Length: 143
Image (tube, rainbow, N blue to C red; front, side):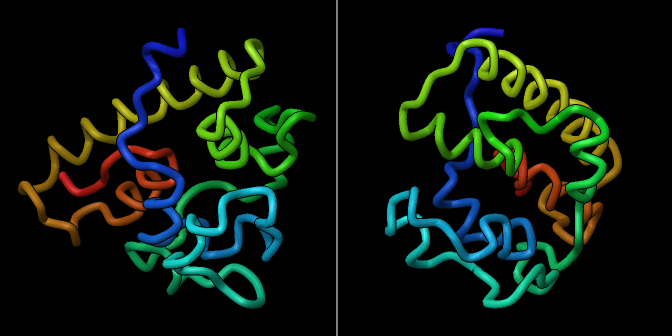
């Protein structure tokens, strides 16, 4: 997987605006990233809040599972979205980038395929958990 093949459909700023990770991915500490990314973000003040998610559902595994599965790297201890934000801002770490881009690529097609196979176009109530997960992986869930 090369950088040229990595074509996310949703920017970090748009993800935050739409509502991801219960509004609590950075636990309130987002000073590292551009302030305008958070201007319209659906953030929580005090922990994960499912109502802050775009589709109003929780999606994905918890941090303990991420660690157990080896999905956390020392460079990005908060996981994929932290990596994606830093990548968007220009940071390049070839080995970590290959790993995270590979994970991104493996995630989207199977979930997009299930939505296309089981939902009417733009039926956003169909497979809301998968749609939320797709958004959290920078794929367009509005298909």
